[in-house]
Image (cartoon, rainbow, N blue to C red):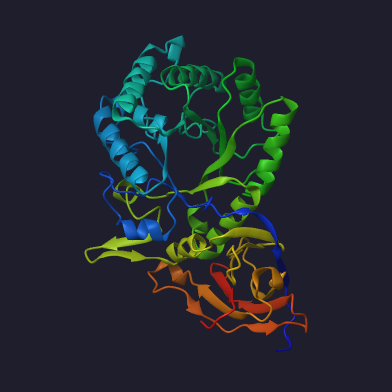
Amino acid sequence: MSLHRSPIATVRVDLSEEVGLTSRRGSGILYGLTEDGAHPPDVLLAGMGFRFERAGGAQLDSPGGWVAGRYERRWASTLAQYRRTVLLGGTFILLVHDLYGADGTAIGRWPGDEGDFSDFERFLDRLVEDVGVAGMTPQWDLWNEPDLELFWARSAGQFQQMWRLASQKVRARFPDATIVGPSTASEPSHDDEWWTAYLDFVAANHVVPDILSWHEIGGRAHGQDPVASRSAVERMLAVRGLRVRGFQVNEYAEASQQNPGQSAWFLARLERAKVDGLRANWGKGPELHDNLASLLTRSRGGYARLGDWYTYNSYAGQRGVVVTSEPDGALDVFATRLANGSRQARLLLGNHGGLTGSVAIVVAGLEAAGLQDPRVLVERIAYDDGRPTRGPVVVRSEIDDLNDPTTVTIVLDYADARDAFAITLDSGRF
């Protein structure tokens, strides 16, 4: 078929160039399980490719946690959600600050006030003992967004002292523990005084986290881009002679960005950056502890899937090997193909900037996937104003092989930037 529309953006994929095995880097959520960890059902977690859970009892009792004298309820919820996560093969990230009670509500005392850490030490002693008795092996996220007064209403210096104490306490009890931090609201940047002071401190005091973490929400430094943020932080580590085991964006996407188009873009960028990611959760009260961070909605009739759930479902279905791709402006794509001679490739196309119009996806290296004459299926994952949906819808697209058996070009209409597209190339019939 000849092309008669001039695309305003073109993304490119090469199926012949492998970059690694699929691992669902972005399939994590902040909270999203019920307080007792029992819901949502397994099929809905497995369907979205559930891999990470980050929790610690936030908003339970409110005020709650250790500092309010209500530690037990938050601990019970944390343990229940940990057990559910492990049962499903996921990794649990324990939020120390929520168990302490610093979850955005006013608290009477902070660790280290007037130079006194004794109460905080008692809290840590209780927490590490509880974790040990329960046989847990979580990742330890020592504090959330310490660069925001909402979560740390004291100086950066006092936070650094707290960080050293907590790191040493956890290491003393669990020498092989994975410590995550600093989980800032801001992206890492060499001209961010908070970040530079933190890295200087952890280097000098030998308390560098195993996994360096931050959030991609406000986008003040790099426009909410994990690729740019990882590049920046690697330079910051290099000048200090520091190395970490990995990187984690443990909250991504503002509430207004939680739609299929934006979610698919974040997933593509996390994969491109080789950074693990967890979807932010903007729920309050019971909604925080349910609905898989707004991938679902719940009523008396049970759970219903939103368009975003199908985005993660499509992403989870991309198995085999990751192949190279090139974004174009607001568009990015995550591309995979099956290994071992299986003749199928899958692409997930996302949109981060409101781009609409005719767009092209050029797929090269067809022979590497055994797809010299592929069937092409294009499905639109609709936002549909945030209402429950029945799943992706097959849409019409234009195909041009340009008389080249190694390349195919797919042109489609991006009418709503909040939608995503799942594209399958196969040697058989759909």
